[in-house]
Image (cartoon, rainbow, N blue to C red; front, side, top):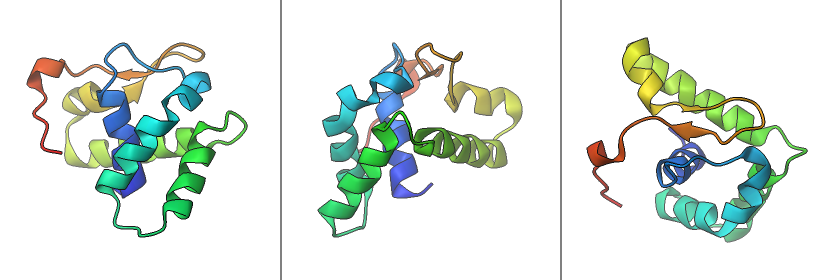
Length: 108
């Protein structure tokens, strides 16, 4: 996964209750902090611009990132396993990752 995709995945992993895409602006600082931790980019401005696109409800960037994460998971795992790690949820409702958090080991 690219650094921005990793940051998005980690954000949703941090919130087992899920996050509505329309509320992503409330998580801007956390998302930016995660992005800084996993990114190799030196430009804070570039990272901030990327995060601003992710939280913009008029931009499709968050949907694109979730699709890329889903595609990467489908390449690595069988459907039954990948579905536990995907960011998913019904339209207009919180999106989340189904994986039980007691199975998560954090290294960053």
